[in-house]
Figure 1 (tube, rainbow, N blue to C red):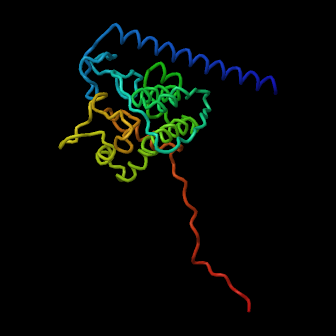
Figure 2 (cartoon, rainbow, N blue to C red):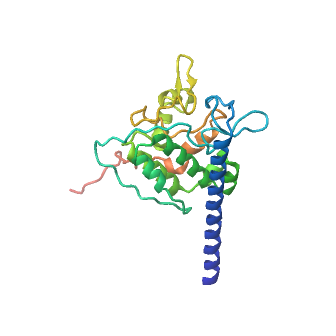
Length: 252
């Protein structure tokens, strides 16, 4: 029995180690590609002349969930009003969230968004890492602990302004109507509610609209975003109802 448990543990560690090496390889490949190649992207959220990866048929992979890095430097120090709640970096997958914590602590909102995207891809599994983005059907298998760690980090360092749980509340407040939700978190602009162009037109600051960050690409459809918001990690605890109709009999 002990030998079986030991073999199983070794197998899990080997799989995670292999996945980590694969992620590192993918990151290195993309970095080299961005240095050497400049392509005009067709994605509505991507700006012109931004290095990226283009699929056959002209649709690019530089979406908000494909792992493509930031195209510009932006920094806005986290506000110092009040203490930042320390977040325990829990992970059922053995992932390291210390870089995300450090970027958020430094007010590097855009880089933190990039790191969040990469971590979500890692959470989704080896196939998502190879593919470079997440299928909405993969979200349900992501451990609660990992999604909550990411969300708690955003909540803590933004003083409750950013995070998936904040977006979930805004979505429910908007009666789960996407157009209203996008307006609520300021992902659209102008009279026609046009989607902001990524990354230049999003607000990488500490005091953007509540729920503005982190980003999730919804131009291909809202299924991925919905899967994240409906994940058990962000379910609100139901309050116990108190039965006030019951009466107690008193013997005299």
